Length: 496
Image (cartoon, rainbow, N blue to C red; front, side, top):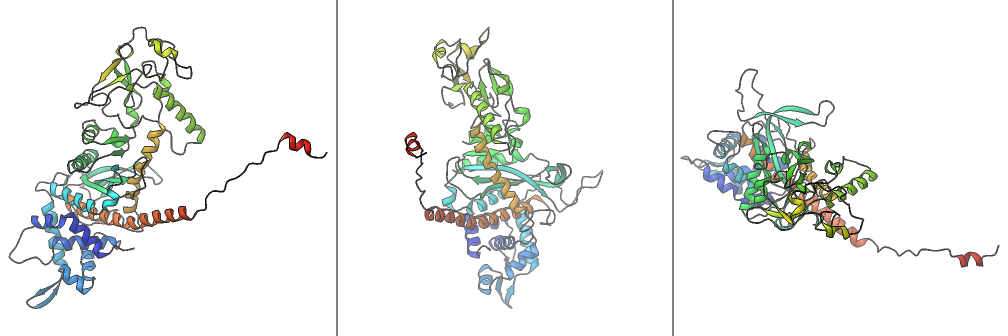
């Protein structure tokens, strides 16, 4: 189903991206027939028709509009010699000026401030306010985007796209799991439902493009923190181990300072015990009793498709591990410090070093061999935890608890977003989709593509929600079933 022209124009007008681009374009003696607003409209019309990102397609999309729309958009202009229809050279010229204005004078593989602001404005305008207010949770991920340029020849560094670089991607095809490609990393933050909230459409709310020579996780952080600075609250940020394995100053700390809560998979190198703090064991982002069984501290996540028995056993171990975790005594202060207390003090385990805990019922774990020289976490009522303790691995839920597993499952929303823009049946961003080189032209096309993709899935989401509501209303109430019981008296009353 194609997107109405009025919807595309409303998004462009609401974003304010067209006046921003127009203000950056040079002004000549003669006015340009093609405006930035009409150029963006033509690009979205091209992508909505599942056409490749080519300027010839933009020209064809604009000149195929009804005559009234062509005159309104300036595709047909009134010259002194009569009506003049837009030419391909004019499309090429205006796009080249826009890409140059949004690019950097000295390209470094990262988008300019103006280019990133244009992307943010268009994507935010493509999200209806009623959906944007339903959730503040975002699923983050990155994917590969190949450039049209061939990589540099062996022994040289020059090519048609100097900002592109060699990157690595994971392939699900038969053969090696990973392979190299030449191009860029596309990062996206996709809306997902809150943990106990209503369903929301998985709309791309932010994106950024960077060279493979740069870190995509570090490139996405300023985009997300800018949302908080603009008054858009950040909630759960769900990411895989590729984000969690970054230095705390590169990913976790800036997002926490912006008000976000992290839900992420830990890298195998970050799992398990990682030192101590006042005697308490640092593991998986939390502090645990010094006598916590090592088998519990080494507990890892469940593999995909685990049987029910394994899930029940894993959840039981996670619950027992949670009993050994030091409990929070205070919330974070202005500097990020908080205090925690021994799990025996909070009544989660029995420990001889805490005599009051020995009066608890025996269904709680018991420390049979307390430390010979108890550390501060065993002798003091509380200990202070500074913000640098487990700064990289600390997150919203205990890892790998059932709550974390259910919350982290929302991350697939970002993967579905990339699958829709890589589907060969519609628009695929494989090599050759866009034959323009450079970061600015490619980022502008990808922004328009995700904007169009947001509009594509909205009607399907609304139809699905309406269908679910209709089915729930039409479903008859459950019939009360009476259980028949055979009693001894009824058996005795039967004739032999």
